[in-house]
Image 1 (cartoon, helix red, strand yellow):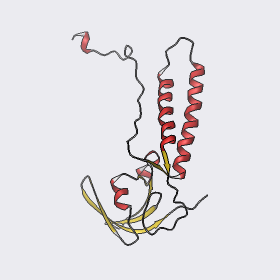
Image 2 (cartoon, helix red, strand yellow):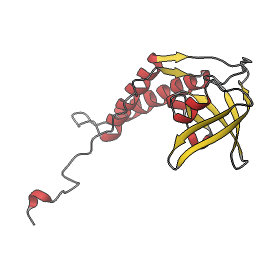
Image 3 (cartoon, helix red, strand yellow):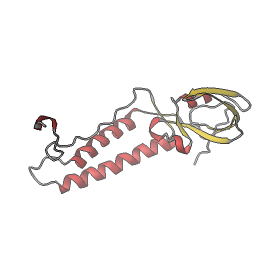
Image 4 (tube, helix red, strand yellow):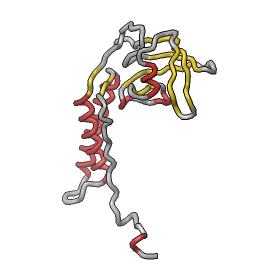
Length: 168
């Protein structure tokens, strides 16, 4: 086999992975903004520690380059953040920042919170406001039936309650 088609991982330096924003408005809850700001502080400290450990004249190691790219991403996310603070509100319909309790067709109940992109965690019930499920829930009130399409077909949910977290 020709050496042209054999890759030796020791010869090819790894490159850091650059995060890219979606291009949608960067709506954040108060908790989401706090998380972004904490991430900036964490990455700034990491970058400083990695830079201090770097030997003079040495190319920046991958962890340092990754920390710099990540820090730039999170700094931009903080700058572009549009705080939507609906804490303590009593809106009857689901909006950004709402927690929506639903019943699935099979009877199981779940709660979803509608949050910003960077704080979304579907497994924990925190939905990116632009996701199909969050889009179906936005505007819904207790008693409404909502449906959304996902792999495997359309899912129907009954909205049981809409609430907003209290202010700290």
